[in-house]
Structure formats: structure tokens, C-alpha cells
Image 1 (cartoon, protein in one colour):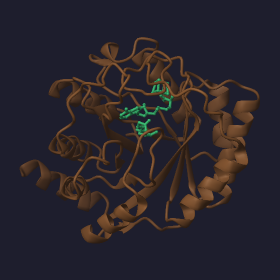
Image 2 (cartoon, rainbow, N blue to C red):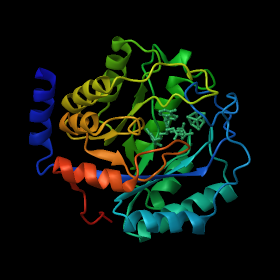
Image 3 (tube, rainbow, N blue to C red):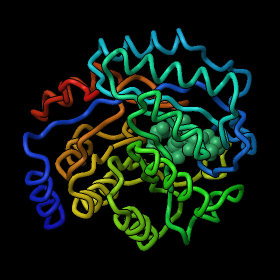
Image 4 (tube, rainbow, N blue to C red):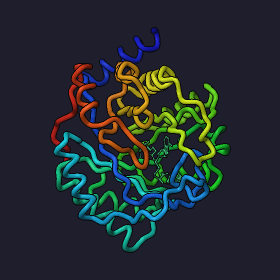
Length: 300
Ligand code: SAM
Ligand code: DTB
Ligand code: SF4
């Protein structure tokens, strides 16, 4: 109760006029990823890997963005299952998608894996608002989750994103066998960044069959509430996103997360490859909680 109270006090002071941002998510390039992230259904190291799905082209992606906007989304996030995106046709198509989303008057976010300096700069020039690149867990627990790339490589991409002037979306996942100290350690890394990441997604593991984490017990929603509350207290002005894991949560659990300081949700029937509450259920949830979606004009 004390934690919730403190988180709420911080949140109300730092973000007056309580509002929740609705972000829609679309997987543009699905599956076949070279990395071995133990949680991820899209890794080619996992038998869950979804193969044979063609990469989406610019027009269908923009049609989805338009539909998301009409349904009330404020931000459009696009995912690519890459270790690092190749220059050439895929990168050019991705830039066209970013420009198209911006022309619709939405915030554009994308997640493409590791980036080099030139790629970061070109993304900024195309008008990208935010780059999502999660640290996922603590530096101490990381090696048990991913072996094909290091924490340090992730941090370097984040630094390039910052230097290019793109806002940073960086968070993690709970429920991957980590200790409470690991959770604290991840939050410490994030909160030690200066400035803090503008956006901090907190995901509860979706344990997908065929991944090494398939048998992990499901996350107690109160654990998610705690993680969000501590993130809010440590990073008062960041947007804390209640991300994966909502589909199996009760409305009450989700309302507690909002109360603890979450001010964004993924909005739309799917995340990347797994489900999410449907749009109508979310509209009802927000109305019942008396929370207003973010409707402001997106800054140029
Ligand atoms: N390949 C890029 C990368 O890893 O940065 C972008 C896509 S990746 C799927 C985006 C994020 O989704 C991951 O960093 C992870 O935090 C989250 N994620 C993936 N699978 C998940 C799962 N089963 N449960 C919860 N979060 C998950
Ligand atoms: C983030 O932290 N969570 C989103 C977004 N960033 C890209 C992705 C969640 C993916 C959940 C598993 C899936 O649907 O494949
Ligand atoms: Fe999945 Fe991204 Fe890891 Fe690839 S890099 S396996 S898409 S989380």
C-alpha cells in the first residue's frame, strides 16, 4: 500500500491530468531471427519460430497505421525480427514506413535490433520519434536469457539512438526466472541513464510453447504492479508502458497497474505474434477507470 501511494503521489505530480497513451504495434518482419533470446517466439533457435511469413510492404503497413489511428491510437510501433537490419531495400522500405506514419500525424516508433551510427541518423531524418531497444533483464541475469549478443552491444545501440536525437524506448520483461534483485538491478540501469529513457516498457513474459521459457509460471499481476510502481518512482517523467502480458490479466489487475503509474498500453488485438485484449475491451477498461486516452496533436 505504501509503494502504491508513493508511486501515485510521484505520478500525479510529474504527469498532471492523468492520461494514457494508446500505442499500436505491428510486426513487419516476423520470425527467422538469428538471436537466441529465450523468451522470443521469433528466434530461429526456438521451435516456436514462425516461418514463411513474408515481410510486409510499405502500403499495407500504412493501411494498418491508418486503421490504428482511426481506432484512436496515438503512436504506431513497427517491429522487425532482425539481429540488425540490412542496408539496402529493407532499410529504405522501413524509412518510407516511418515517413508515412509521420504524415498521418502519429508518433512513429520502431524496433529493428542493433543499429549503426549512419542508420540511427537516417532514422532521425525520416522523422522517427522513438527507437525501442530493451535491455530485457539485469546485467547479471542476461547471460541466462541471451547468448548471441551482449548487454554492452545493446547499450551501444541505445547510445547511438540518443546521439542521433531519437527518443529512447527501453525496458524489460519480468517472469523469466530472475530474482527481485535482478528486477531492481534492471531498473537501476535504466534510472541511471541521463536523461532517463523517455519510454519504459514493462512486459510480463508471455510464455510461448517452443521457447526455453515455455514452462515458466505466469507472472502474478501484483508483481507487475510493483515493478511499474518502482519504475514510476525512479523515473517520474518517463512514459511507463504496461506492455506484454495484459491478455490474461483481470481488469482489476490492469487498473492497479494504471494506478501504480503506467501511462501507456499497447492497443490492438495483437502484439507482435501473441494476443492482446481487443480494442473494445480496452475502451471499456479506460472508461471504467476514468482515464482519458492521449489525444493531443503529435509534435512535428
Ligand atoms: N528484434 C528486435 C529486438 O529484439 O530489439 C525487435 C523485436 S523484439 C520481439 C521486441 C521486444 O519484445 C523484446 O526486446 C522483448 O523485450 C519483447 N518480447 C519478445 N517476446 C516476448 C515475450 N514472449 N514476452 C514478453 N515480452 C517479449
Ligand atoms: C516491448 O517492450 N514490448 C512489445 C514492443 N516492445 C515491441 C513487444 C511484445 C512482444 C510480445 C510477444 C509477441 O507478441 O511476440
Ligand atoms: Fe526476438 Fe528480437 Fe531476440 Fe530476435 S532479437 S529473437 S526478434 S527479441
